[in-house]
Image 1 (tube, helix red, strand yellow):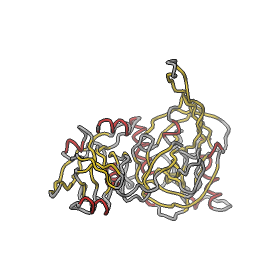
Image 2 (spheres, helix red, strand yellow):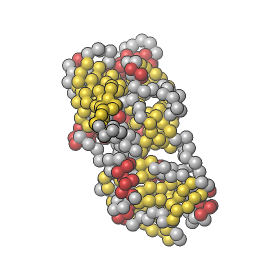
Image 3 (cartoon, helix red, strand yellow):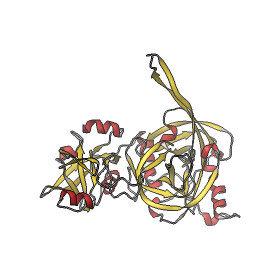
Image 4 (cartoon, one colour):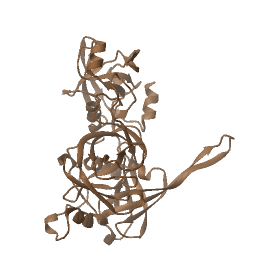
Length: 406
């Protein structure tokens, strides 16, 4: 797991949209915002995958529910070992040298009888060779990467294994889960294969930072123990269906579980996997601006004409927001120790939906597709304007987007 940032119930945030979290600090501090890291798709429509729907009532079994889920789904969980390529660097003496390399381990799960396995993108990133063990078997299979999407931290790999070794898991509907629902995680924490932990859905609609710096929407929070090595493994409901991909844990300065883990919803993964299978890549919508949620203190200090919305700080030159006429700030100011860019538009509505903060904008952009249009209502001084934005294709990383914003 790599280090990432996220918002937890923040009254204010900042994002290079679609979804890039950018470090702004308005007069309210960012809430607890660090996670250890190891959207493309709305939470509604589910793209079909060739994973069977398991009829739990037709199977006989003994033991408690967790034991039954473990026995039925454990064989479909993969142990992934990724051999990382050493990085070529130049030493202080001007000589070429290698650094890094080694082996990273993670988890994954089968989704069909063709050998396709879903995992996290960061599990296989930079891998020169990927080896996979399925279930309790010690047999290793070499896997190939079908595609990876750093923006949602989802990757699809494939193994050529005998049919009797392939036990795909059933996929559930992550839009139907509720806080308090029981869940089970199966994975390989710290290389300890086929480890099962259990807990509940602790919260929904979280946002976490993806490996490329953009944000992932509709994330599931759970207290089921998740540790390094669980990345890419399934989060399973009480019907034995996968509802999420375990991806990150809360960062408290150590490498262990603290009861706060995050899973990418399976509904997001379905659409990502479909695009990876068809095209080998995923394209996400992009708005091209950064800003922050209004707070009561900021509204009062600046005597703003609206109480809620997103104050636009910067727009990417030539990007969708810029082309539509959305304006960023033109004045630098320091309020309660925070450097701000003031004077930009305030986004109050998108497609008729009221905007209460940056998370609303991030979610709407993540749920859209490149080429779609958005009607964006902005407050510019005492004037209200509605601008039509045609969304673009998101850059490969926040860094590349930020370079265009300067």
